[in-house]
Length: 432
Length: 93
Ligand SMILES: Cc1cc2nc3c(=O)[nH]c(=O)nc-3n(C[C@H](O)[C@H](O)[C@H](O)COP(=O)(O)OP(=O)(O)OC[C@H]3O[C@@H](n4cnc5c(N)ncnc54)[C@H](O)[C@@H]3O)c2cc1C
Ligand code: SF4
Ligand code: SF4
Image (cartoon, chains in turn cyan, brown):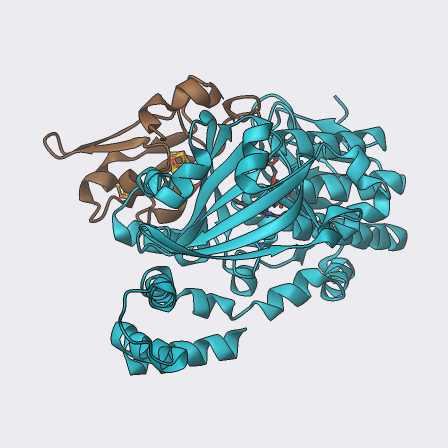
C-alpha cells in the first residue's frame, strides 16, 4: 500500500467525504481513511438530511443523484403528556419541489454514496482502517497510525473528521481529554418497517412526500424528546436524551424509548411495524463551548469532531454543518498548499471561512439556547400546562367560560408559580 | 418494543475476539454511581451486588461512547473503537 499522500482525511462521514471530494477535485493526492467495512457502516442519525449548500454546489442535480428516501413537506411539533397532545403542524407546497428543503436518508447508503463520489474524483478510499492517533515530526502533525495492519500513513496535513469522540483531535492535543455529559446527548433509534401505503395513510402523504414529527414532553421528565421520520417504507423512531439528565434519572434509554413508543398518540402511528434495526450514537450538544482548537500545525478539525452540531435550534442539524465545514477545511488546505506552509497560522484561514458561513454564525445564534433547554419544566410541567389549557378551551361541560388570557395565566401560576414563570419567560426572551 | 437482550437478532455485528473496551474492575467496585449500567443503550454492563463485581460484554456494543463519557473514574484500561472491519455493522438506519 502507498504510504504517503499530500493530505489525509480521517473518517468518511459527511464532513470527511466532503473534504476529500473537494481536495480530490482540486487535484490533491488525498487519502480518506474509514474504520467501517464501508463508509456509513458505523453511522446512524435521526434521519433528516437538511439542504446542503456545500454539496449542491458540487452536484447541481443533487436530489437526482443521492440515495434519498422521501423529501419533507410536513413538519409537526407535538407537546405531549400521557394521553394528551397539542400538535403544531406546518405544511408547505414549496417544500414539495426542487430545491427540496430536506430528505430522509439512511446513513449506510448516503455516506457510502458520498465517499464513493470522493473516490471517483480521485481520492484514495481506505476502509477497515481504525486510526489510532497522529504521528508527529518536529512538533508538527505529519501523518497517522492505523491500528494493526496498515501501520503508518504520512502527509503534511491531516483533517480530523472522525466524529464526536474524535480520538484524532485528542491525540493531537486539540480537544480536552475528557467529556462533560452536560454537553452530550444520547440518541437511540429503531428502524420500523411498514408498507408505503400505510405510512402515506397515517401521515397524510402522497408520492415521495415525507413528514417529520418531533415530540416534547415524551421523555418521562428526562431532558430530551422523541422523533418519528418517514422513510420510503419504514419509519425512523427515536429519542435524543441529554446525557447528564439521563444518568441522574437512573432510567435506561431503552425503557424511556419503549415508554415513548407506548404512548397512545405514538403507538397508533407505529402499530404493526416490524423492528429492523436498533442503533445508538452520541451528539455533541455543547455548541460553542464545546468547540476544540480548530487547527494546529498540520491538522484541522471538522464536523462533529469540532462540535459543529446543534440539537438546540428548531431542527436537529449536523450533517449540513459537517459537509460545509469539510468543504471549508479543504479550501483552507488548498490555500496552505499553494503557500507550501502547513503551520497553524496558515491553516487559520479555516476559521475565517467558517465565520463567513452559517456554520459558526448559527452556532453563535443558538449559543445561549442551551439555557432555555436546561429548564426542566420544559419536559414536564409546560407540556402539561399547554394540554390543560387546550382542554379547558375545547371542553364543553356546562361550566361558564373565562377569558382565555385570564384562564391561561391563572393556570400557569398555579402549575409553575409566578417566580418560575417570570424567570423562564426571561430566559426564553433573552435566548431566542 | 425494544428488548436489548435480543439485540443480536436485529442489529448486525462482526464480533472481534479481542475486546475493544477493557475495564479495570477495582475502579468499578469502588464506584459510587455505576452510571454505565443504566446509560449504556445496549446494556453491556451488569453489576452484581452479591459478588460485588462488574461484568462487561463487548459483543453487542453499539460503539456509541456513552460509557466513555459518563465514567468519571478513568476505569478503562482500554477504550478504543474496534479494529477495522469489526464491531457493529448498520445496514440501514
Ligand atoms: C440520534 C441522532 C440524530 C441526529 N439527527 C440528525 C438529523 O436529523 N439531521 C442532521 O443533519 N443531523 C442529525 N444528527 C447529527 C449528525 O448525525 C452529525 O452531526 C453528523 O453525522 C456529523 O458528521 P461527521 O462527518 O462530522 O461525523 P460522523 O458522521 O460521525 O462520521 C465520522 C466518521 O469517522 C469514522 N471514524 C471515527 N473514528 C475513526 C477512527 N479512529 N478511524 C477511522 N475512522 C473513524 C466513523 O466510522 C464515521 O464514518 C443526529 C445525530 C444523532 C446521534
Ligand atoms: S461508571 Fe466507570 S467506574 Fe463506575 S462502574 Fe461504570 S465503568 Fe466502572
Ligand atoms: S460504547 Fe455505548 S454501547 Fe458500547 S458499551 Fe459503551 S455505552 Fe454501551
